[in-house]
Image (cartoon, rainbow, N blue to C red; front, side):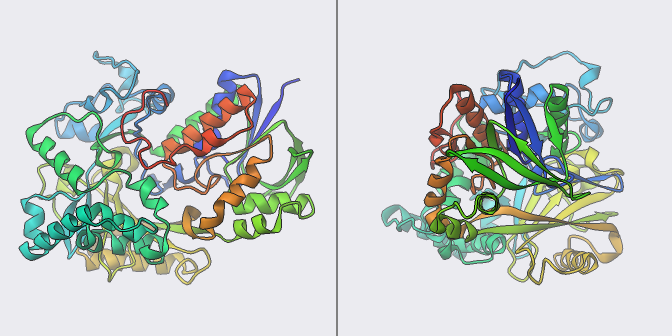
Length: 538
């Protein structure tokens, strides 16, 4: 009889684990997903023919394994997409140099033409900018003439002098503010990072662990930004470019959820099980091992007990610990339980806004359809707005928009589940979003055709609250021999999608090799230097 692996959550980590188990073992994965969506935060939402990417997901990794994995699920386009054809642009494969082992087919293949099939990955250009002083600045910040002109000579000189100070005198990196100042100088930090980071987390940077910056910004600083700019000017190819500076990425034609919906379909075809709208409410432990899970169907309230040999969790750790305690009569040590319940999450709202057009015109040298802005997303640094970021879905994939003549935006807000902002009605949230678009001259209210609100709880595990004591929780869950924690919420770590996948692959390797020491899983995306250069082995 086949052994069973119970997997909690059908996001990138959980689905990767299930797929890898089916590919490499005879263990049967059974996935329980509490919602009706596949892909976790990497899902694609559908609204009247338009598609919404929650938070924006670039398919790029310094890991060849991950890049090859994606392209073996969805092959890469071999013919221009709709917008590239309109703009008479040729395909550019430079993204893939030294990053993937997947062979590129030069000749035309109608099966890989995005105009004829949906089952393709598009090659997209990444352009991100920051809105500050009602002006658009390149992101990552480029210290060129345009930036100096917009900032003003005095502010630019101050930025340079402040950064030189950090080269001589480093602050202790015991909080996120000091981390940013050490990498960019105080003036640049206050200009381009402080307000946006406050919007994301709702507290001052000085009260957030520097770990978040170490995992998100990694080795990027002004020096590397200048070097990158010089390479761009001289067209010198960079093989070991920082992830934050990557200018191309792959993207499923119909949004990130298409990748994970395809993986889910393959898992079922290979013999795995996937149960949506089914929440894990308890984990039963005997002899230091989980024996079974208690699940409840959200639609009919039917409860079941499912036995298994291995248990892989991507659910929020505070919920996992509660589920263990509820079934096992407070088996979790009180200090571990209290720390887990003190972990904090930041929640996320996207307001999709469909427009006839936008007021801001493209003043870059990048051609776009209808001359709209070329950005994939724009960070909003303005302190008079609640708005944190704007996505332009047309530029992620023209196929996310039902009518390519319209502009489809995602306006992103950060809040806490249950607070005053979260509990606003959809109409109130849409009105606010449209009003803020108008205030920054993106679009007037008369251009709005439609809008929709999507709320995502526990989108971002926070690096404050009881996070500084997190190791006690980690040590406890690691003491359970057949339990493996993976993914963003599973590890309470702000992982990118590729890091979540790598943690899943490590967990499967541990199962195959009978390894109970999970330090290799926790090592994924834990070091400041992790994935700064192309990783040949992971």
